[in-house]
Every structure is written in structure tokens, then in C-alpha cells.
Amino acid sequence: MGAFNPVEFSKAALRLGGLRLSCSEEQLLSLVRLLTHSLAFGPTSSWGPDVFIEIGALAAGLPDMSMSALVKEQIEGVTPLAVSLIPPKKFAVVFDQSQISVFSYEQAVAVTTSQRAALSDVQQTALAMVLTPWEDRPVDFRGRSSGLILSPSPLCFLVGLLTLRILLPCP
Image (tube, rainbow, N blue to C red):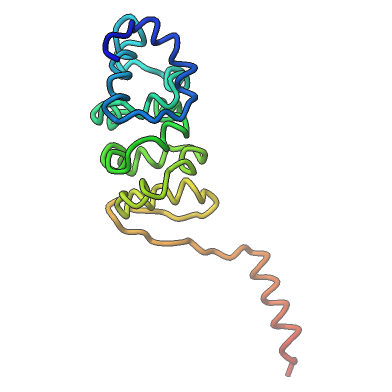
């Protein structure tokens, strides 16, 4: 694979990136090396979301250091397919809770059961927050959660008072 022409391979990346490749981690890493060649897409740090979208599943082969250095804009371009192809142990090491918290819903849904099992409690909480955004759960990412914030609306309070007034007889 290392003998492939980086320019030609970068042209094929769009087609290959949409496939569920059955490559080993080493093979994917070799393919990513072609993509980071100066004649292809250049260094990973210069990639925008458009490059990640274009290379699709091939992004799963990024080296650990490159993947752990991804910023919000780059993470937004990582396809759900690429997310699902990252080996579980690697997934748990390269994505911290702040990176997981910027996943889209589609990316979070793509996290496999084995990837989820490899995550720490804090990482799992970040993932759960992406999957259930309607819950208002402030989380201290040092490992503590204050749970749900429950605050009744004024309408609920009024309905409760009216119910009591109807159910309890006046003296």
C-alpha cells in the first residue's frame, strides 16, 4: 500500500471512504499516511471538516496522536461510519469527554457497543448527553453529576393549587 501514488490515492479516497473497509488498523494507518502526503491532503492538523467528509471511513486509520488532537471543527467532519470503525481501545484513548461532547447525534449513535464498553464513566456520560440532548443534566467532568434539574413551571404550580382548592373542602 505504501507504493501507491499519493495523488492518485487521494482522488480515490472519496469512493473508498464510503465503504465499510475490512482493513486492519495497520493497513488503515498506511492508507492515511498516503493521504497526509504533501501532494495529497497534507498534514492532518491542516484538514478541515471537508477533508474528513471526503475521506470518510479512512479517518478511522488516523494515528492516535493525530486523532486525540482533533478540534471541534475537524470532529464535526468525521463520518459516523469512520466513528464505528475505530477499534474500541483506541476510541477510548483518543477521545476524551470534551471531544465526545461535540459529537453530532449521528456520530454518537454510530458508537458501537464494544466502543462504549471501553469508555470511562465520564466519557460515557458525555456520550449519553449527546444522545439525550433534551435532558438538562449539568455535569462536572471530574466525575460528579448533579443529576437532573427539576423546576416546576408557574403553570404547574397554579394547576396544583387549583386542584387542592377543588379537592379540599372549605371550612
